[in-house]
Each structure stands twice: as structure tokens, then as C-alpha cells.
Length: 117
Image (cartoon, rainbow, N blue to C red):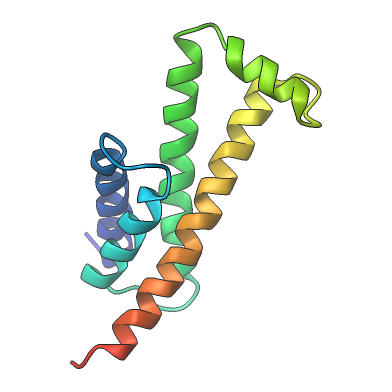
């Protein structure tokens, strides 16, 4: 496996584990740790953590919402300018989590550059 795939999987697994006992920002911690352990280069520093957490939050919010027939998601989608569409809300949730993780990945890369080799 190449570094991008390993980083994607590690970020996903760490986010899953951290989500059991840490708040929402734990996805950023997962992205930072994964980038520190498995170095990424170029634009991959942003988009690999972004895709990993986008997939994680989208799946996780879909599973949580599906168990209650999207009741809460429908109500929140009405409050936001989403036309009451719970699936669009789930997509927006994934994008927000992905952006947070992508920025955290860049931060992790910058921290790694500061550490002595």
C-alpha cells in the first residue's frame, strides 16, 4: 500500500476510535496524528484527511439519522437553508468535517517540518 492509502485508513480508524470518547474536534487530532506518522506531500496533505473524514462523518451521520427515520436531520435541515432535505444536511456535515480535517492535516505537516529529523 502506498502512503496515501495508509494515511487515509489510519485517519479513518483514529477518528472512529476517538469519536467514542472525545468531542467533534477529535477528527482534527486524528488527521494530525496520521500526517505525523505517514508523511504526505503536496495537495495530498489536505485532500487525503479531507476525504477520510468526509467519508467518516457522512457515513456516521447517515447511520445515526437512519436509526430515527431522519427526524432530527429533517428538523435541522428546515432551520438551515437546505429546503428540509436531510440528505443535503448529511452532505454538508461531511464537508464541514472534511475541511476541518484537511486544515488539521496541513497543520500536522507544518508541525512535522518543525521537528528535527
